[in-house]
Image 1: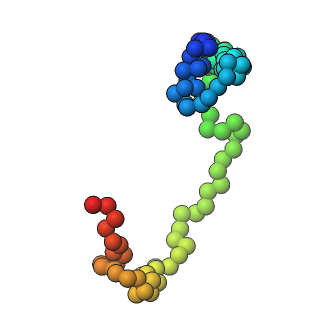
Image 2: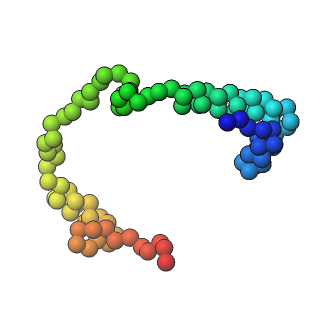
Image 3: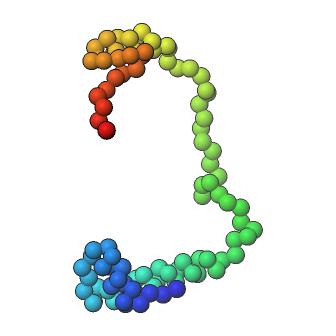
Length: 98
């Protein structure tokens, strides 16, 4: 796939970018090089290549799944004591969307 100069001007217009003819020709060359590279990469046979999650064979360090904080009910009560309005353990806020 390759672009034309007219298509570059149209894309620039849609993007609200003012572009001169010289800039459009330069951009056209760069974009066509990118499209050529994409076509070249799509032509590579990758059927026998397994998908990778990472370029190197690394594993995440995992931590033990255990509780690290105590029950915060008393702390929550202290925070809600200074809140303007609460109900059933929830903070009440003014309606902002009608």
